[in-house]
Length: 261
Image 1 (spheres, rainbow, N blue to C red):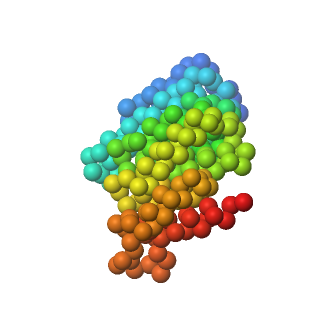
Image 2: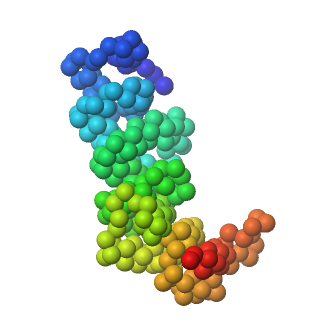
Image 3: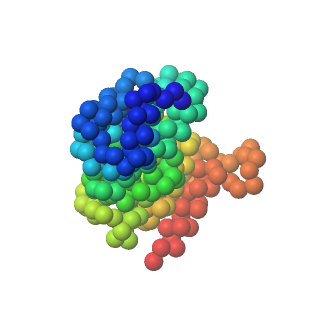
């Protein structure tokens, strides 16, 4: 990754314990707003190494903007049928899921819901640490996650549904930072159940069935029984010793929900 002279100067100042001047902070913000991703990445890395820089409201706002910009880059690549690792290289993926994610998670942990929402609009694995963390925020994050669960991009749907299922489970056990309203609970159950039955992608239906299990949604038992008997993904032809078909996931979900007391 190419390092600019300005970035080197800022790093030396930071490592030396010096506070950034107004001009130096302006250089940092300029880096975050650069059209060149490597320049944005270097600025984010500098901030990740120096959490004190997050005391600036301008820097925090700029970081949320950067996250949304990178989300758009990833989504545009996906819609074009390519991954960012193919078009921009592995270094881009490492920057996105590494320092950028870490800095935004720090902001979210400090109560910045704009940062949490930007992360929820992004690309992440449904069973990742980020997914589990996002689930804990509860009600304020639900509109963003519902939007993700309706996305035309498969991985976004899977992640949105998975986090919503985790959120229902945490709500049931009283572990959310902000408990869900009754109408919100009904909304989430409806969209997860619909995904379990009707997502056009087999992987999407699997994640939705798992979400119902994690949620402990007893009202979905009849739906799961139907899925276990009729889903097109019946496990035939699988080479794995464990059956990960939608039907098998539904059977496991039924057992998991029935075990809840």
